[in-house]
Image (cartoon, rainbow over all chains, first blue to last red):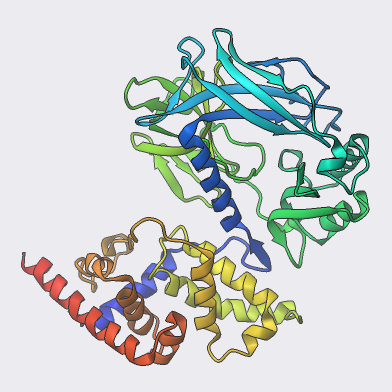
Amino acid sequence: MLDVEEQVARYAEAAGELVRAPAVIAPIRPRKHWIAVAAGASMAVAAALAVFVMVQPSGPTSEPVRSGGSSATSDPRAPAAGLTVTVTGVARQGADGLELCPADRPCAGLRLLTSVKTTGRMMAYRGQLTSDGLVLTSDPAPAPAERLVPSVPDSSEVERILATLLRIPSVYSPSVRITGSGGDLVVALYASDASVEEAVRSATSGSAVVTAFISVLDGSIADLPTAPEGEIHLDVQPAPVPAGAFGRLTVELTYDAVQGCVYGARTDTGERVGLRWPYGYTATDDPVSVRDFDGRVVARVGEVVHLAGGLKSTTAKGPCGADATFVITG
Amino acid sequence: MAKPDREEFEHFVSSAEPALRRAFVSCRSLDLVPDAVSASLAWAWEHWDELAATENPMGYLFRVGQSATRQRQPLRLPPAEEISLPEVEPALVPALEKLPERQRVAVWLVHGCGWTHREAAEAMEISTSAVSTHVARGIAAVRVTMKVNTDA
């Protein structure tokens, strides 16, 4: 048998080979630490209350919005003309992680106060869970655009900028948002390169700050790897989105051979929960396993998994015949 | 600040990337290692002149990667059986995991990566004599743990 020092050398060499090399090594500036901070903040919020709110640019509204309301998903690149808020799920923090609040068993007494940033102005929404579901009501006086985005004169100008941004090739609309942050106009993208940043600068007359999860410093975002395809249908995000965790869900990963899909079975009640996995995740057969973007197995059927993310739907059927969908972010 | 030309940088990456990958296994779980490597190399790209001025670029990049990532869970090394190394006793892995982080990193960098005590010292921001102490105590502790586990 080798001495300990030699064993350490052999083992370290083999262990280093086990690690996948970064898909695109350089020149890429990873921003995962930013994501981690964002997720941490969200988890802190989730300790008090967890709610998943999806905001879609669409027609203008000033009326109360009810859960299960319409969402504008037909054309994700459509220019924004206002705001529709769709509340698609509710949950609260329980003793054993996130408690789901399905439509037929609402979490009595749950109240929430949240704010939604819109194109050019910030509207505060007050929400209350009722027997009809969650009802959001906008506060009467939205903040004027000038206070939030001083470099842009009015909301119509912001909307023009957004419409221009959405026409930039390679800017995936679900990853684009414009917010007023400390008075700056911030365009947050999943990935950017020099041409995208130049296009954003041009569209905003240089007034915008671009932040990106991945910045390709020398090259094109077209060089980034594309999502793989799996053998079994898996409900996944259509595009990479920044991580944000609103709560935690513990389920046993289960395969429905009839429908050919994967779902989560709650460990306490066996209730079926549809799972929407992050962009690029796939499912493979024999044995049924879920893999991440890089093909690494992250979960196998029969395993109990702890998922971070948020509940999406209490009304529409989720994937795999589930009553609700949990959008996984980590 | 001057950037390297692409060919020059790719040549650097071809040697630095595997070495950093191996080094980071000592203190980051396998899913975090690529992030640490990426952060290191991205920093190298953006601070090429600064890196060139350092005496021990690998040690510097090791610190950059450590700063850019956080190991929140107890470190789990891959089991020896998983990587099919019959010459490595299975008891080695838990013995390494059991070491205090500084001892494990010192042992790993010196014996696992072939770094000199001075290079490891710069990477760990401690003195060379401290590295020697960590390595000696770490190896001794691994021997004891492995003997106990093997005899049991």
